Image (cartoon, rainbow, N blue to C red):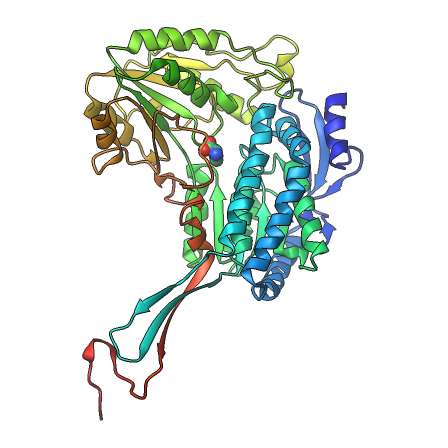
Length: 515
Ligand code: UN1
């Protein structure tokens, strides 16, 4: 094992020689299949994890239910205090965890650390929330009656998370779920088990030291079958799933068929639109970050670029110049902007899309190949690509499907309305961004006839949302909302309580039913 890898793993007490138990439900266990964690930069195997057997998964869900019956009685501000301690424990390991994200997922160090910061931020948010998850008092039409809307803890929340944000997306869910008084069970991506084990250990220590059952924040590593079993389990009230539209459709149907609740965060196919009056010195670097950052592997990555014809050639000149400065390298080395794709499956998707672009006669302005020279050939490194497809038909597969890689497709337009129509014509609806200094364009963009995505930015790129607003997308992105805003309201069960304080028992709507 490389010294860079062993230093990071040992800083988080992750054994490189023994199989690591990948299940936590108050105790660490795991006697199922062995998964290996592979470094996307070097191809080296980092560690082996013992995943959950079906029985262990079943037991872990049972322990989560038991934990919920205890935890729901802990007052919300006290739950907030536990979150505050989790926040402190994460902050103490911010660099180590950030580096582990970088090592195991492949994103650059500043982004790995940023992900841990995002978890810390949402903990802060949830600490506040723990004193503000207020219900309502509703005016009753009947004399001497009051109606209360009471948020009660929901039950067991399962989080099925993706490889691209192996820490932050769990954080969004755990923080709200814990504040709301639920037990949470986490099934992370099979290819980032070490990030999840490191995080779960930190959280577990805080719970245990507060005398809270560890199964309040359980962990179950495993593959597809574990995910399917969770979707089908009637002991899980809410399944929060992040991943592809394809898998999301299956999870959504399965959870719905037992009338469970879901939060789905699926594909993004995000566009940036640049108007002629935009400040290009801001827009060009923002599109560069949106399309190349995280090697194009954020749900919010910029995949489509619509340029007004007045500035198209200048914009592309400046953008390709920035692309030409990109040096792929080890994401753990300071200053690297481009790390590898996460997996060999991602490599394949990248090259399939490039082949398709070539077959439809798209112009490849830059990129289009894998890096095959040593040492990059050991990892999944690809060239960030800008292409100009011949067709601007938004229904064509190149425009309407998400490729989880740094490929940016460009088209030019003459009227904002046309660009908004293209923005909205795809199945997905996660994020979008307009670059303009004209307030009238802003009004069109954020209003009823504007962008139909969940995240609608102005002079800000498509990716890199803060935790304060609800995060999520519309249409085939799944309509889910996580993190800030009103997202917490999904993690509780609402009780509408009509209370009669009077000596009469009148019926609503003036209905008369006297015998
Ligand atoms: C994701 O890609 O699944 O807005 C989440 C962003 C990040 C989260 C992305 N804060 O890009």
